[in-house]
Length: 610
Image: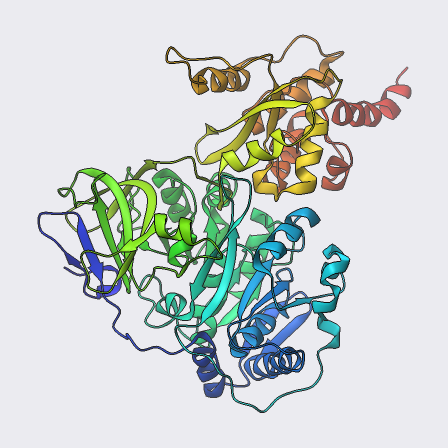
């Protein structure tokens, strides 16, 4: 049976077993593939960013200088090197220089709280840390002797790179249920299956990619390496949250052909500005997808929608399904079949394959499977097992419930454990609860996810406490914001006297979520001081699908982000005559503050009326 791109996918005619062997089993390292593309077209533009353009020759030259600096400081093959950098023109060269040294990179987003950065560094124990001047401020004094500033990289080396396919390429840290992040160790051969003959999407030297993902999110692996291996051009979105307008502008200016967009952002663009990616092949994934949103984007002119699925432990993408205006998706929205180099097995609780069309847990095999978790052999043994269907192989337990169809494509059903995706980042609510419970005065915490509108999954925390203090919710949120990445900070923290219990004595999570659902669908409470406050609160509820509980509830604390802020700003302008800017909204995004701004704008006009 033909898989995506026409390559051979083998599906058992009775059981939920499918595999897609890679046409090029020997592919070399990431650096070898990128250098081969650079040798073919050294003068071609490789990267376009806010600071200008970098050719392939300049990329290799810069990577060689990074490699020289690392070697001079004692980096050895097999070491881990932390890289603190945003989505910057210099980032690919920093990462390539690390790889060509025979080391693995540990990407850390500079906007992460310092305490989280310190936790990742303590777990990874990198031999060296590469950081720009701004990012180095996140580092405690104990790391300064390992620091290499990007401004201090000058000399070049002529020594050939030393890397092989089985070397570690990177370690990306994801949320852990104990509150301690876990590092996924990914090899070169896990990644190069995405770079050579990438039949899951169309990539060649004429491709122009738009890179939107932060380097600490594994989607950034796709943003860079497959395109650089093809000799293509990559447009780097500025290191700020992308919006429908900023994406549309870059697509128009540079003629973007391909991009990956997380599900939440994809759904918002589909709703607010579906024509923003006309002519673009859009890969999307990270959360449960919507066929309705995909059809809306196709109607807006998207060339194709590729619905992807893949845990970090299987190197970005495991499956893919491609849809066009002539082959439109329907619900349930298929995540497709295994891409080249990947096997998919749907198994029961005894790890036996289930019949086609039957629900089971997805296990992933083949060249996709990562090496395991850094420094955690027990967890590695739990999640990574010998592959009974392929000799000498290994498979990874995804924790996802799926159903395989006769053509080998999969329908995602649900998570089997507590993990979930928030804005494309994998989060374990238990990890957030542990952070809350570590705060003095917090007796207990339950953290749940609620999808108050399709594709918009947000965390909500319920806390019991011995503290009686005004503004306690905002104090707890501020503490989490200082310790955790944004995706792990709940949209709302609710103080409750006790947790409701079900008949079997367990916490009644449905009862807790019912409170949020009622708030989302309820009318504005009558405790506002004037019509402006009531109108602003109504718009908060409309945009967030969550009603503010007080005048001092902040739009961003309730789960608002830059995209939702743009939507709120539009409604404030059209419905209430708001003349402020997005910066005004960021300055004071409470119900009280926005309403006060409305009143201030109206005052000069009213003063002149006789």
